[in-house]
Length: 302
Image (cartoon, rainbow, N blue to C red):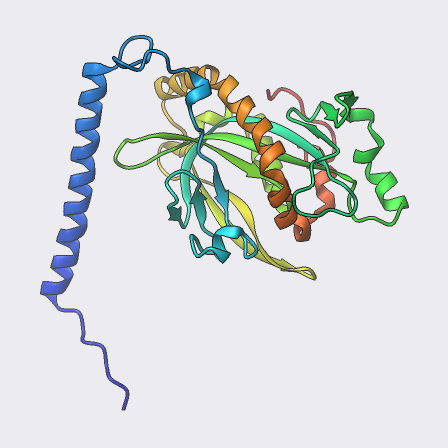
């Protein structure tokens, strides 16, 4: 007969609850202490004594990624498929509670016979103007490499130029500690991202007003299994923040816009090769659609 696990007693249940409450209390005390230190020592210009030379070029903007089965973090046993991995803290969470401050659109065109270490043939950090390896500026809207009809005529399942998004986000925690991060969206996750963009447009509410819990939704196709990003609006206060908090988030977005732009450019040059390799099995023809479900181009956002 198999050994039975001992049933939980009232004492063990109470002890577990007490431990959880103690941990929450410690986190809240730490947050209160941090807030007091900031109030005492942070100058009006945002600097601290002895660190006056620091500017945005000295700040490392953490990258949080949704881990796929093929991700390097899985092979290195740093994270599990379907989790959200922080490149700075090297910690993983099953979901990501956050607000999304700003959206960037990116395009990259890689060599047809791609191998790890190759540089992109052309790239864009705004989805409008690309730069090729000779430094020439390319109009993305008229570039044949992003044309879906051309790709289909050549027997390809997607254009040579891949489109994706980059989010600048802010982690929301119970302790009150808030951390900026960047998040790259590609492959199958582009479609739900367009759905969230459409929600902002229809409701007339900026993206930074929503309190979200990002989740990894498991899916599969002929190429294999993978995870797709799910935008879940958190319950409570209709999923939005107060007007006062929204204004604070808007001001924060403006203050770090240059930092976000540099991070996007660095991602394309140094990291996107691995991201594109992971997204290769997640091709979605609907990536070519506009933000509106009827295929028309949406206006009024960014």
